Length: 319
Ligand code: F6P
Image 1: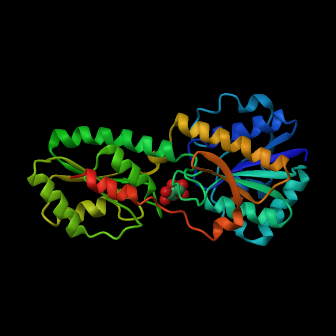
Image 2 (image 1 turned 30 degrees about the horizontal axis):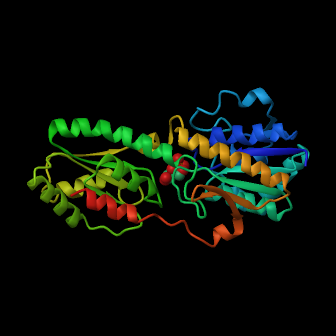
Image 3 (image 1 turned 135 degrees about the vertical axis):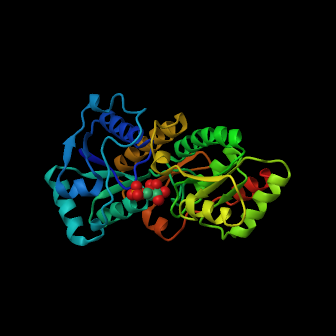
């Protein structure tokens, strides 16, 4: 193996740059050449590929987003596009690939591996919804960002004695919402994994107000119910002085926390070790503090488990 490629794909996540840096530094120090592929699988198909030299990954570890750019590219599920991607890999002399992203990124990597290219996947998504890893790159930062924003909302909530419903990202996963709820001291949390009843939430809010909790924060994951919809429904149930705020894509931005940088660095270096060992089709993870790998095919047969003990804790502590 002489040359490896790196791409980021799907929703960007803080720490992706730190992962790119780690892959590049480890590869260069192992005397491999490194190519960056802009805009994920779309850029691969279009041949948006360039060589990464040593200095190009300097001053990168602290940056949010992805300087390799990213894209959602469902077309890559089709064989025609995969073959075009492989043609580009061959043209640029790239022997193996490291992909950093979520579920879609892994599917792309598996298809390349099936075509005889070694590809390794790193879990880069704020959602923390990838199996066989306790944490994904970007998750810690997304919680930190959400909590910092909610602390600001709390200032104005307190000043006005208001209820605020705050929406965080998470189309299919309540992981960000749960940690954010605990760390921001919320009154209630709503996630896609748990059915909820608006009458019950209205009851919780009213009861807490009766006990003197004039201002309260309710966290919802976008995939459960949008902040404004829940705000309207609670207002219709007689809860006054209530507002809704959607944090939206703010949750995905910002400089990665130290913890995400370290995780990305460990995983990036490990990915190159796997490739040097001739292994492809593997997904890197962290389990009980140890960096591990599993066949990507096993990943597709499993589903990431949301830690529902966090749900119980958030509800207990909201009393
Ligand atoms: O990256 C995952 C995620 O952040 C989800 O939580 C969210 O629903 C989605 O991306 C939004 O994606 P987009 O930016 O493409 O609308």
